[in-house]
Amino acid sequence: MLNAFRHEDDGCRCAVGERRGDPVDRHGDAVATQHGHAASSGAVVQAGRDAMITVEQHVHHRGESTWPARIGMAVLVSMCGTAVLVGVIMVVRSGIVVREVPAWTVPVAAILGAVPVLAQRTQQRKGARQAFLVTSAFNEKQWVAGLVQRLHRSLDRKGMDLVLKVPDREHDAAAQAHDLRRILATRAGYLGGVISPTELTRLRPYLVEFCTELALPVVFTDMDPFDEESEYPDNAAFVGYLSSDLGAEAGRWLVEHLRRRGVQQPHVLILASHEHVDRQNHCVEKLRAGLDAVSVTIDDTCDFSRSRAYSAVQAHISSATARQARLDVIFCTSDDMALGVVDALRETASPSTRDTVVIGVDGNPETRQMIATGVGPMRATVVQDSHRLAESAVDVLQRMVDGRMIMKRTILKPRVYQSG
Image (cartoon, rainbow, N blue to C red; front, side, top):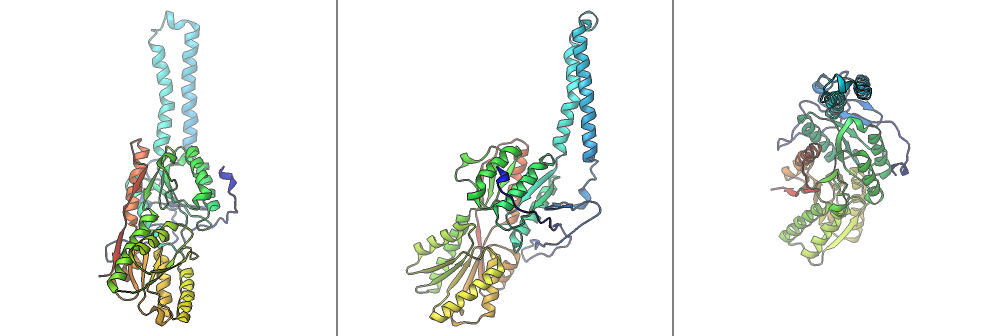
């Protein structure tokens, strides 16, 4: 059960909103920003762990009643419908209907009594215009911030508001299970949502239980939680990039780059995390299949953190310098780590890193701008297009809400953004 995961709630959350006039990169994409925002109109609602991401002029100005008013209306409608039905039953049992009232009026009266109740339930379903997003991480994750922004905009075009759930601890199953319980407790306000899962070995059974109990459309992204399509709950699907594809694309680029430079016995350092291990594993497979005598070192302790990658690469540079060895390429399984590596390379001069190049994963605006200049060691990134991902995820979510057919897996293909 979801209650198997427990931890203390710090009750501290920042609301993330949209700011007009955000900067754009050279490709016209908005540069995602993370900042607090509050407004008296209720455009951004902060409640403990939750932040509602909306466009201000659309919130509570559609003539929608408040929850207390909706509850009162539901009670009134139910009482009226019940009174009509009781009256119909009494008339039938009294025998009056046979003598004085045409028999066809009985089913008509019953239908009229049921219509207000059915209409109220339909209105409640239509009134749920919120979609949730449960992330596995947020701090030091530019790509996640960009995805939140684009999901918000895509949902807003369809008249939906986005409620963001940010975990207390990054990549932690217990923290994410807490957010899932919070959603179940308030599921009447949602039409469905998106989950970026974490620690799948621990969380996978609870994701199945969550989907079953929620009984609303759920789109998984970032990590495919199930090995087979048959394992997916009926109300769930996956949209996103596969970690194996991202790693393989990086490996192909590295093989071509090292061959073009004519590097003999190249050494590749991979900075990674315990999450998304297929990124580093499939990169290594491509390297060893395409290059002779390649040496690969994997450091999976960096946890997608810029600061951890900075410290880790400094230690690797010191080791390589002491051994008089080269670091030809550093592959980072996220752009945030790649930026930390670039910082360290700039500040730590060494013969071992004179010709080192860096490649990352994500396609963050800051990284692409750095690559476009052609100055410095950052030369490529494997792009996860957050705009394309958001549009695809929202499209699948909308189709599920409408009861239309979907594919259980929508796999997007990555591309490499490189200098030159």
